[in-house]
Length: 268
Picture (cartoon, rainbow, N blue to C red):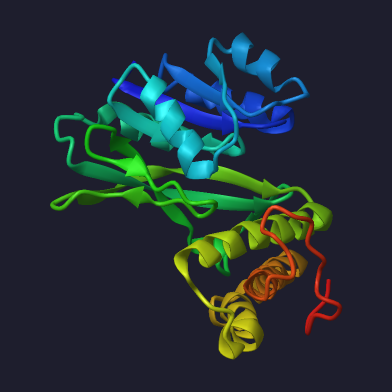
């Protein structure tokens, strides 16, 4: 095996985790699972694949990923999510890397799916993320959502061959649920950063997000799924600034239950 530890954070991922770990086991013999209270068979599946499982309280995506990084046996870290599956090309590429320069960060291409349908266009069709790095140089930002890698000066980013296949949502109901969930987390992040729910952000940005994904990036070529994804992006953008406005006005605490706006320009 290569000198790389894989870190995965989980909560109730039994439906997909086995497929993820099956391919991950061809990359590393050190797979760290940081679990946050799973009640399904997630832990049983992880243990069956020989993962080292740790139970940690939830402090945010970046924070919990950093917890897993600290528990890894190797300095080189491949960070993946439970719904992401490495393909054979990516596995072969990783086995050919030398891992002799800790200042290199590797960027991996994604193939995203709506249910079992591969999405080729729109915002999802061009997805890629920096996921392989050396923990002595790099760590995750500890924001509520949309965590990023904090790169040191002089870091070099290289693209590797192969893909992580991302099974993001199974249906429109899950798509809608994720839009609402991440909107709330984004609003909390924006509030902490001092951002404002300006008129442009609240009313025009959602429309632009929809048009960019559906028209400019040709999301309509993915059929109904392309429309659903563009609508999800619209709803997520609309909601996060709606929630931010409520937080700014002191009407709701970030930790409280939030209502959806009474009317959206575009509905599912």
